[in-house]
Image (cartoon, rainbow, N blue to C red; front, side, top):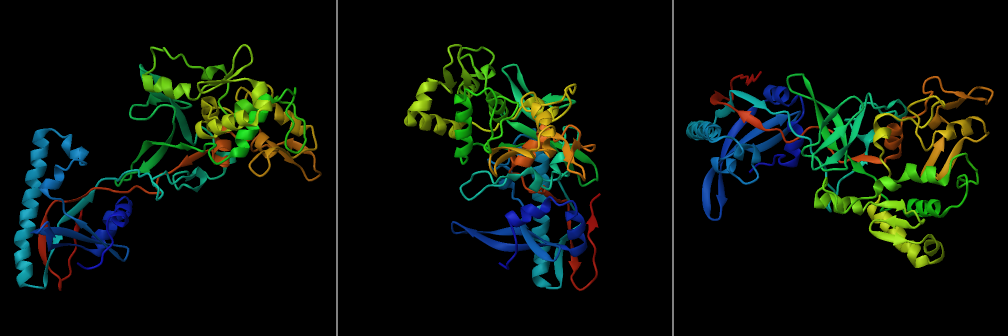
Amino acid sequence: MESYLNNDEFSEITGQPDFIKEVTRNGVRIVVRPYTNEGKTTDAIYAIFNYKGKEYIASVKTVEGLYARGNYGFNRLPFDNQQMIVNNLSALRNKILELNKQVQTNPNLEIVPTTIRKTNGKIVNLKNEDNSPKNKKLTDSAWLTIKDPYEINSENTQVGITTGGLGGNVIRFKNQVISAKGFPMGKPVWMIKTSKDDGNTSQVGVILNYDNFKDKPEVADLIIDLLLSKDQFYTDANGVTTNITPQNVLKFLVNFGPQTATNPNSNNLTVEQIQARMSKQFYFTEDNQLVVGQQIYKLEDIASVPEVRERLKKYIMDNFHWNIDETGLSTNYLGGSLQSQTKDPNLYPLSTFLKNNNIDKITLIPGLLEFTDKDFGIVKDDNGNKNIDSSHPDGISVLGWYIKQGILLTDIADTMRDANIYIDDVMLVDKTAERKIEQAQ
C-alpha cells in the first residue's frame, strides 16, 4: 500500500486541539484494500487524513477488534451499549463496502466521511528503548507554564504526595485534599490543566518520578559523612562553617528520622505497604545504632570498615531518593524571617548566615548541590551590600527548588495523544468537484 504515517505518528497528532479543523479543511478519504492474514484475504477499511501537509492512515475498527482484550473501555460497557456500538459499526462498514463497489467502476469517485469527531486524547508516558521512563526536568515540559523556578509556588503549581493506608489513600495539596484512588502510594502527583476540544479545561493528575541516588555516589557519600559527623555545625565542601547542623542538612536531603520506623504488625497497612515502608527505614535507635531498611549498623563499623561503608552506600543508592517533604511541596520556602510560618525547618538559618557573611553560596557537592544567596531571598545592591530581595523575600519555594534541581521528573509527552476518532456516516463524492466535509460540533 502507499506510504503513509501511522501508529505512533498518528497517535501523536490526534490529541492536537486543531486536529479536526485541519483534517476537515484538508480532506479525509476512506479506502478499501485487500488484507491477507494466515492465508485468508478480507477487505480492510482505512481512513486517510491530511494533517498539515502530511498524510496519515488509520484502520477502521472491526467488530472483532471491539472485543479485543485490550479494549477496556468497550468491554466495561453495559451489554445494551455494546450492542448499539456493534450495530452502528457494522452498518458503517457495510455501507463503505457497498459504496466501494461504485468507486471500483468509477475512478473519479471516492468515499468521504460526512462528519468526524474525536475524544480529547490521553496523557502518554514516554519510554526509553529499555522500557525505562524517559524522564526530563519539569522545566523542560510543555505542561509547566511557569518556567522560572523562583516564581513557582504551591498556588500556581500543584504537587502532592499520595499517603494513607487501608482506610483509603489521599493526595494533599495546599488548598484541597483529593482521593488517591488509582495512584500508587508514596508517589508525587502533579495536577496539570488539559484543554478540551470544546475550549474548556480540566485538571488531570499525573505521577511524577523521583530523581534517585542510583547514579549519584557522591550524594550517598555525603549522606554517610553527615551520619558520622560529630561536628556541632556543618562545614561545606569549601570549608565554610555554617550555622546549621549536619543533621539539618541530612534531613533536608533524605527522609531520615524516627518517622521512617514501621511497625511490621501494623493493622493499618497492607502487607505490601509494610514491606515497602520497611525498606525505607532510616533512623538512629536509642543506643545510637543506625537502622537502614531492615539492617542495623554500628557507626564505628561504618567509619572503620570500608566494606561496611560500601555496603551501606550501595543500599542508599539502590533504595533512597531525595527527600520530598509534603509541607515543602505545599507551603515552605528556603528563606524567610524568624517570624515566618513558611520557612523550611532545616535550612532557614542559612538565610541569616548568608546575609551577614561575605559568602555567596553554600556548597555541599561542587557543581551538583549548592545553595545561593538568591535561594534564600538575598540580593546585592550596586555597592555590593546584601539586602532582602523585594520580589522574593522568602527566597525560592521548596517546591521550586525541587524543580530547579531536577529532583522531580516527568516522563509524560508534551501533548495529548491517542485520541479516538469517530466517523458517523460516509458518502460518495466526485473527486473532480469541490467538496467540504462538515465539521462535527
